[in-house]
Amino acid sequence: MNVVIVGCGRVGALVAATMDAAGHAVTILDISTLAFDRLPDTFKGTAIRGNGTDEDILRRAGTQDVDLFLALTEGDNRNVMSAQIAAEVFDAKRVIAKINDPLRAEAYADLGIGTICRTTILTDAILGYVGVPGTGSTGVRAPAGAHPGADHPPVLGAVSAAAVNPAAGAAAPNGRAVASEA
Amino acid sequence: MFVLVVGGGKVGYYLTRELIQSNHEVVLMEKDRARAGQIADEIGSVVIARDGCEGKYLAEAGANRADIVAAVTGDDEDNLVICQMAKHHFAVPRTIARVNNPANEVLFKHLGVDELISPTRMVLASIEQDIPVNELLHLAALGSGELELIEAHLAPGSPAIGLATGDLDIPDGCTLFAVIRNGRATRLAPDTILLEGDKVLAIGQSECKVALHAQFIGTSEPLIP
Image 1 (cartoon, rainbow over the protein chains, first blue to last red):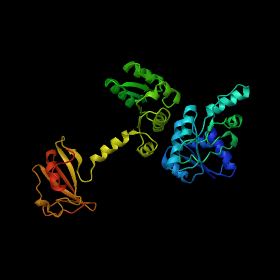
Image 2: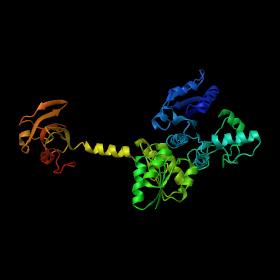
Image 3: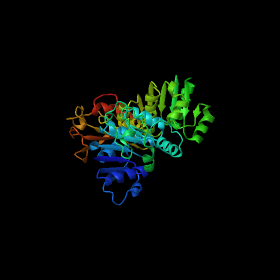
Image 4: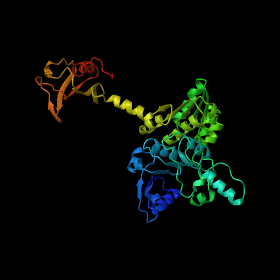
């Protein structure tokens, strides 16, 4: 499938490399070309320097034909805006944003964007590892509210399908699998 | 009225000050501690040194009872998220966002921000207003400023089209000296017939502009004095 990834940090680069190796057509964006050094030499996808909250750049990256859009920069709000442009302007059906503020992650899932909250995932992974009860909230949320992309639940590679409840996003994530990626 | 202002830059600072003066209840959120402290020293304890993008701190600032949330930081994505969180999570009735990139205006409206303030658009509009197509164009000030070099563009409908320069009623103290036609500048003679699309160059005192406007543009009052 066609994948656009915004942000070539550790997570973005690893997701891009992994999906590329699995045969998907990956385009990755970052505002710094230095970030692309994180991609392996074997990467066959496209790397574009540009701002992921800029409509023109997203068009150049092919967001209009995207099957999966991932906003994975370090900035929660940049990810939110980027994801919403993909969903609202380009009608991308499957959009996921990394949002590290748990409250914002929850709020935007309600607004129809799939969200991944590293804070909750890591916390639960750590607590689970040492045998202490977790936060009880989920770090991976399927879009729950009205949105063009709302009827398409996200496909989240490392997280088992059972970890995502498309209706409410209430199930606990498979913490360890995600944490090893983060 | 309880107004929650997010972003303590120039806009947020003056906005907060004005709102206090007009007796509104105001809280200003500014994430930079030093900046927040500086503003608090000046206008009192209405400043919270927290990031207004963070849901937890919005709640602490009383977002759930705010009548208006004004997001005026320098970053568009922050302003968008602040307004959306205010609207959807805290049910704030009215949200206002500063939009720095005019290209974001449509998106922000579409995504539910109630009102947009666009400084870039405002400056742009006022610049464009200064260069109207059907107006006299001030090219330069001459001498110590009492004389102006003026260009008049003869748009369709200009009363000067088809007339000879000598037949125009040009006031004293003003000289028409050249016409630009098809990219070439030609000296104006009294028998030169003016055509649509011509650009007539004149030098004159500022007071002449009213008369020039009437002759070349057609209405007697210049839009810009």
